[in-house]
Length: 431
Length: 164
Ligand code: FES
View 1: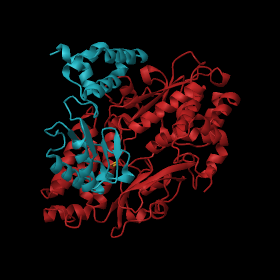
View 2: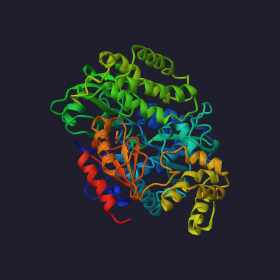
View 3: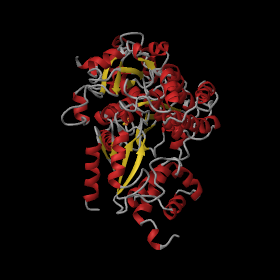
View 4: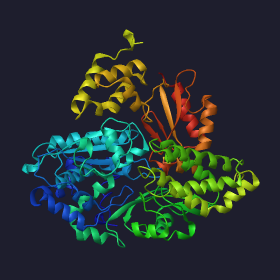
């Protein structure tokens, strides 16, 4: 593969660690920010990104250009605006943004300058997971160097546009990945999601117009601006454009993450890149893109990993990093683990989520440990039905939690029944 | 209980004031101020919380609401080292329960507890973004992956032998 086919990771994994400003420039960096600030209007940047069909890489898949287009376009400097990088990577099974943050922090810096210029925001914030200590050190180092060289600060390249970035290390809560909860956390409050409208683009951080973009989304921007929308469209195998950092965890020979064309089939990722299942293990089912995506069956492993195809198969692309369930790991135990996470990380604001998720966790615990009753399955179905649809709670946390449960109840019906019938986990001995 | 020896040292007070000044509103510095206090003392006591709150122009209850909301702010004392063992799904599949059981047996504590010598606190943590090297854990600020019961036990032993 040549460099242009994996733009996001081309400079990652070099023996000397992440590139500094000069090395980044020698390898093609800073071209895009030069072009944007010297030759393009903010509107032209938005148009290019819209034409590239870049969609959010954090899980929701919203069109990036479209997201930006809701920011009010008044003359610059008339008011504060914010560009926030969502680096709160906490979706279980997801390890792509850490790769980008640690591997090439300047790529994110350049992406943020471009996004900031497009929406005419002078303030950039990176909302970083508190556990990402190495990323924090490397980001702060990169930002300080970029400031010194003049890529950050006032009047960048004499364009009149000024941009600053500061890093906020989170105190740690999954819900901060939700953009309105993230903004609330930045304001020094308990990170509860906000009702929309107003949308952040109009009334976000401190009431000012704000855009929250995922790290991987922002890292695509320098390449789109430097090489053009047509080039970006040509990278995808199907309807979606660009490349994607895919990954696999679970009992495969070589778990890992790889930058591949958008739309690569999961089978190719699992068998070719991850080396297939380990000896003695067969694929049973998988979560295509993190803990809050619905299970798909092993028979669906040929699914193209793109937004539409995964949705058609009955799940979501999510973060694009798949978690594999093998035939010797208990599906009920896996669901118990997942729902423990969601119950613990509920912010507690909405009653169905705060009370419903711990109930689900207890029911799964009982079934897994052999004290479950047949009626417990009805209760689990009730929760999946009542909490699953969007709109019953403020945010998507509870619906996300119900995605693996609802699909798991269908897919693992036999295993659930066996647990209840045998009053024990049928897989325990082989586990 | 704000006796002289529980007060924040002057340089820490100055750092917190500076953090608050740099933000759009002082309260935005809540988590970073608490993180600073914790980096200094290992945890955030009632007295330190109250003093931090007053530097941010907040009530102690208001700041405590934030301190207790987040996973990484400790409102109780912890050991000199904190082991955070991932309990999320990929690590679970790859055998984190066996790693946890061995750590518990070796350290003689359960998750949430600190060894009697004050050396190590064991805590669960959500996915550390190291799932391709599951099971994973964070020891203070250092990430460790591809653990099994033996390697984890060895790491825990090293922590207890290391000078405070
Ligand atoms: S699940 Fe443990 S590091 Fe991701």
